Length: 389
Image (tube, rainbow, N blue to C red; front, side, top):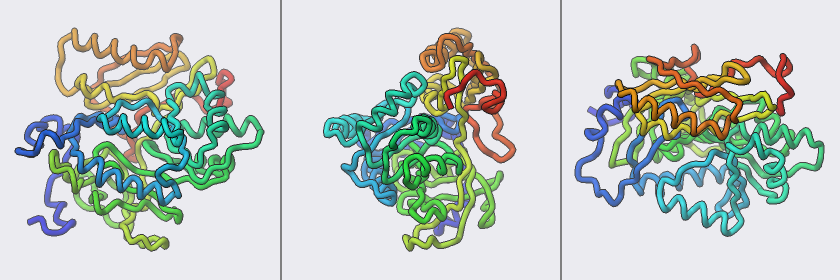
C-alpha cells in the first residue's frame, strides 16, 4: 500500500511519546550493534528524546547533506569558522576527533554560548583576533554578539556568511547581521534525528529539503496533508536510519509547504517557511543577557522528563516546568530538582531563584510554536536595570 510519498499519509504519526513507550519495538531486529550510535535530541522543542542512529546515517549521508548546505553559503571544509553554541556532549569518538582536529589546525574556534553573559568582551576580542570567514551558531546568541560589536563603533570583522541553526531566525536579527558584518545570513534546519533537513540557498526563496535523506510532510492535527501554502506540523521520514526508523515523525515544529521552483535551479523541493524552536533571552538584575538556547536540557530525557519549558517571571525568578512520563517516588523528584538547579545555577547566577514545577502538560502557542524559553519581563526600556542588549 506504500508506493509513493503520498501514501505515507495512510500511516499514523509517530510522536516522541510513542517512541518512548515503544522503544524496543521500534528497534530493527538483527541490525549490527557495531553500527549503532546512541543519540539524544537537544530538546529544542521542549521534548528531549533518547534514540539510536546509525553510522551510515550520521557520518555518510547526514554529514554529506550538512556539508552541501554549508557550501551553499560558501563555507567549504577547511575555511576558518567560529562556532557560537552551547557545550554539547560528544555523541561518539568520531565527533570528538573531528572537533579536536578542527581546533588543532586552527581552522575552527568553538565558543561556549553559556559563557556569553560573563565573557562577552572576550568573545568580541576572540572574533576579531581569529578573523573567521564564517560564523555558525544560535541566532539569539549571535544577536547579542552583533549588538556588542555595533556599540563599540570600531572597525568590524567582515565575514563571507553567517549560518544559523537550532532556533527561529527573525528578520530583525538577519538585518542586524547584515549591518554589522556586511554579509548574508543562511538559516539551516537540522536536528539530531536527521542531520540536515532543509536550508536556504543564496536566493532565500525558501528552504531546500535534503530529499535524498528525508521526506518532509506538512500535516494537520489529524496527520492529513495540508494544502500547498498552508501551515501545519512538520513530519519527517528518515530514509537512512535502518536501525530505528523514524516514519512520519512529528518534529514539534510548524512549517509551510511550497510547490514553487527556486530560481537557483537546484531542483530540490522547498519549504516556504518554518516556525518553531522559539526561545527568549533571560535577563538578570546585574545586566546580563543569557540566550535561552544555552540552557542545555538534554540531561532531562534520562530523568524521565517528556516535556519542559523555562519561564522567567521576574529578574530574580525562573520557573522550570516539567512534564513527567509517569509517577516517580519522592527520592527521584528530589534528585531531578537538585539536578536542574545545579545545571542552571552556574549560568543564571547565585541571585536567581530557580523553581522546579511539575505540570500535566505544556501547550504550544496559538500559532503552534514551541516556546522553550519564555521571558515575561517588560520590553527593554520599560524599567529594566541597565540591560546589556
